[in-house]
Image 1 (cartoon, rainbow, N blue to C red):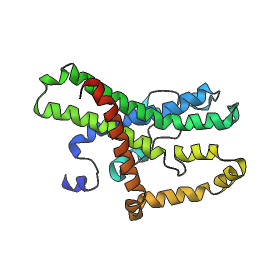
Image 2 (image 1 turned 30 degrees about the vertical axis):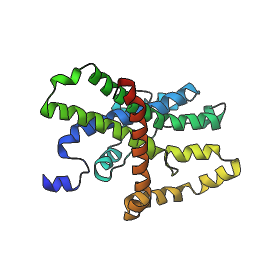
Image 3 (image 1 turned 45 degrees about the horizontal axis):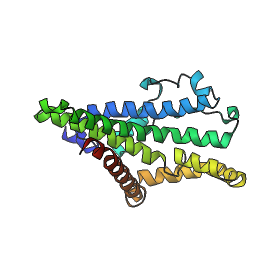
Image 4 (image 1 turned 90 degrees about the vertical axis):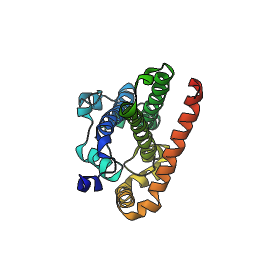
Amino acid sequence: MDIIQQFIRYPLETIPFVVISLLIAFTVHEFAHAFVAYKFGDPTAQKQGRLTLNPIAHIDPIGTILIFIAGFGWAKPVPVNRFYFKNPRLAGILVSVAGPISNLIAAAVAIVLFYLLASLGVFTSLTGLALEAVEQFFNIFVSLNVMLFVFNLLPFPPLDGYRIIEDLMPDPIRAKMTQYESYGVILFLFLVITPIGDRTIFPFLGNGIYIVQDVLFRIIAPIFGY
């Protein structure tokens, strides 16, 4: 067990909570992309069975495993055909931002649900390990969804943040970005895989996650008197 734990970022006893949280977070994220694209007239994802809340349609095995090993990961990208959009730039931005926003909403809903259940006294009958398990699940669910929100807004291909910036740029700059996108992917992988990421991208990611979570709790907790 100790050998296995060396290669996993989460305590072994929390793995079921992480798996459940990931299934929901990845599914909600990709469904949001597919749903917004469909609403703007692109049936590509719908025809490929991606306009669904079935996790099997969205989970990427390698991307999911990396969450446990490296602390970041991904689901299967939703296919989007911009030629169906009447306003490709606006639709492209909204499709891209839909995924991260869905994770932020999921985190907020989880916090609201936790405080609501607490205020109704649902947790009063729980003690010891049962109460600790409930708190762990909510903490993991919120932190993973916030992580996906912040991580996907980073301005590196193929993340949503890069797509948003790409659609905001004038055509000449957009063309250049498309031309050099493969180099951006290599740079991104270099940053997240090598120790350089510990001094660049990961501190930024960690601070971003902390700030977003703090803001959510500061907004929601007082509503329930906490």
